Length: 335
Image 1: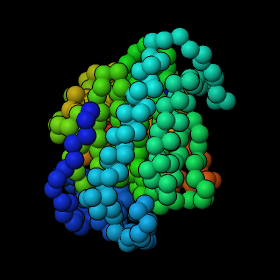
Image 2: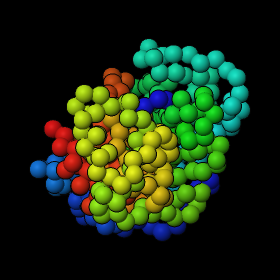
Image 3: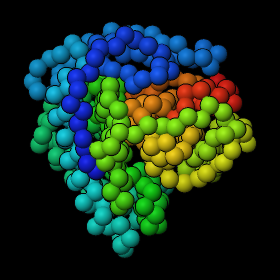
Image 4: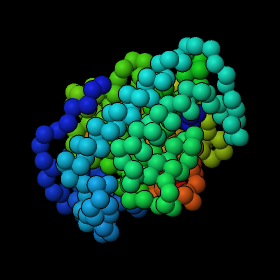
């Protein structure tokens, strides 16, 4: 995938319930029977709670609450298997010769993209047949037109990096519960680094808990974007405002930049034109590390996947420090 864009250790502690809070609370939000949505108001965050209907948990039962810890643990084990399978495929083709095909949008795709996605789809169909799948290469995979749980897959986020031998691409795996990402994986199969974010838990890199770093001022920030050439029109102008105010603007990395942010090495990522499969997996990873990720208006990111869903484009900004996110939003002045 071309948009701007190891081991799993499970938390043995039960998640406590949490009242709805704003996006800018100091701790990772826990799951509850309500979800919170951050809405812009003069670029300030407010939150509102919406009740959620009953959903199937994939085990044949129907819940009126979010998945239990044991269910999340099971989903996380499956996600780990998906990343393992995709990595096995990708490593076989990395820095090897293969055909490169241009898709309708002129973005390249390779046999590695397609084979890695097929490997993940096969595992999901075997282990979680009631769950739907939306893959970048294969689209909607489900007999029904909608599903309570949807896995969103991007086998290679950063295909240009992959085909040029740069190991800064990644496999992205997200599990949505009625449009809300509850689990996310960023996997770098060459470096064998795996970031796992689960709602209500601290993000882990290869089993070790991680956190973002403090950087409350835009003038002190190290900022990444995949390429300045991926912005156009008003988005290019808005991005330039932020670029000119940060300490160091950097380019490249695709999804790997968000992983570096979650680990506390980068402060800010600003990108335009991302598809849902480019950013949904990033949300639990970044939020679980103490950071925040929104669109350019400060709205919480989500996507209701179905057989009729279109993978529309989003402008995305992520920050390790929530004060920094607010400054970036104020600078973007996106309306």
